[in-house]
Structures are given as structure tokens and as C-alpha cells.
Length: 343
Image (cartoon, rainbow, N blue to C red; front, top):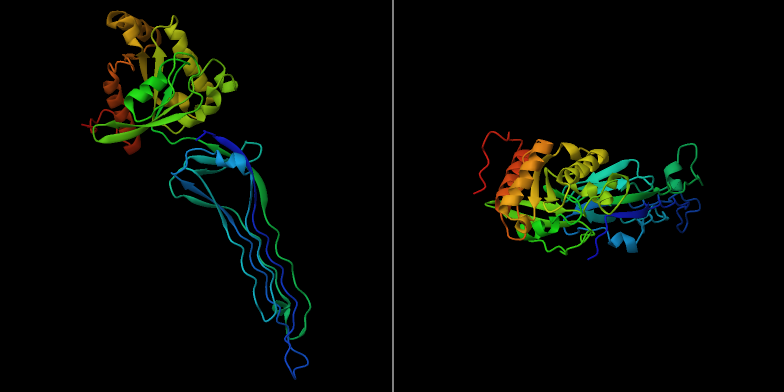
């Protein structure tokens, strides 16, 4: 199924049905009283978050959604039937934004979450409603209340525990494939990954979800490259795994480019807990890879791990570190408590 993380749709709730003007008619009864019923209420529009969807592709082929109108009132005090509500099912993690994309109107982050978004119009009153001691035969009625209409943007932000970030061709997809059940496209050229991929990682008795997004380049937060529109998919993560290709010339520059893009994008990405890994150690050899790691550690003042996603070297250790962070962040446990044991 093709991945789509943004879609524009138009919504309209149901109109209320008009009231009815009618009078009671019966043999030998010349002047029957008013018995026009009220109109029915228009249908509401709801959004429901479901975990059986992971893309907004369906909204590319249908952009207009309308709830059912209420029926007219009728004689004999019959109230019109209410219009059926419309439930729009979206993936968990979907945001609803205004047409300008400036305001988040709703955020559906939990499975089964239901939101009434547009209210259907109330039905109008029939003439029976206006009968009084001073007006025994009213001919007044009211039309139903109008529907609510709105155009909105849907934006999907995947729900994952760990996000993979790095420059193109750093080996993120290979790491995801070697450590989870995901099967992303892998090739030896930049921008192999064109859309986010999710994989479930099992570490001991604990499972967590990892997201791989297209590689970032300088200026990504301003719309350059492919990764800019996908940074939102790692907003909800507990940790970031920063993957760097140890065979490239400027390791410090590669690290600082990604950190700058995370900071400029905002939304707290730059403050998330981070594990840094030098990937493709099998291409350099253990001794040279260690020299590269020490050089980068000295330049940035942070711990740097060495792995090979292809051979699996040190991958398990990194997964245990990530699992510990996810556990601590989810359950509010201090990282020095030592309460987590995934084995």
C-alpha cells in the first residue's frame, strides 16, 4: 500500500429537516388542531483512530465527506428521522489541522479514540410547537438548522518509540531490517528510503517500535531534500538513534548537520535522548573504526558507539540501550535506578 502522510478533505455535517405545517383532519371535525411535526436532526461527523490503518492514501481518492440530512417533519405530529452520523476512520497518530495548517484542531493518539468534529443541524419546529392559548391554529414553522462545513488537513505522525535519524545512505534502513521485522528497501545510493518505515524490535521480554525516516540533508527544516516532511514522524518518539556512516570524511560535520536540522525543526526533537552510532565498521576494520569513534567523541564531547548493521556487530547492545531508554521514558523511571532488566 502506498504511504501518504498528508491529505486535504472537505467535511459537511447533515442539515436539520424543516418542520411541518399540518392540521388534524377527521370526519365530522371541521376545525382540527395543528399537528405538524418537527424536522429530524442532521447527522454529526466523527473521527475515530484505528490501528488497522497506517497511511492516509484513502483520502487521496475521496476528499468530500457528508453526513446525512434530517428528514422533514410530517402531519400527525410525526418527527422526521434523524440523519445518520458519519464516522471517518483515520490511523492512530493523525492530526487534524485548519486549512492554513497553522492550528492543530485535534490530535488522535490513542487506539479507539473518538472525536465529534462537526455537529449536525437541529431539526426545525412544526406548527404544533407554536400552538398556544392565544394562537390555536398557528401556521408558523421553522426550517432546519444549516449544516457545518469545513475544509481541513489530515497529517499523520507515526507512533513509534525510537526514531532513526542521519544523513542519506548512513545505513538506517539496514539497521532497521537487521533488528526488527521490517523489510525496507535497501540499496547503496542516497534517498533509497522514500517514506517512513516501522519495525517492531524485540529485546528480551520487551517490544518497542522503531521508525526509519528518509535521510536528512542540510536545510531539511526549510523543505530541502526528502526528510523535512517526515521529521514529524519522530516527534512522538522517546529516543533517537543517530546513525553516521564511519567511512565518510567529515564525521563531525555529519553529526552537526543533523543536530542543527533537529534544532531548527523544533517540537522538542533536539532535547530527546540520543544514542550515537558509527555504522559500517565492517568496511573499515575494528581498529580504524575505533580511531574514528575516538576522534568524533573528542570533537562533540559525547559517547559514540561502533556498529555494523550488515554483520550485526554490537547491534544487540544498542537495542538494549534503546530499550532501557524507552522503558525509563514510558514509566518515568530515573535512568540510574537500574530498575529495567529486559532479559
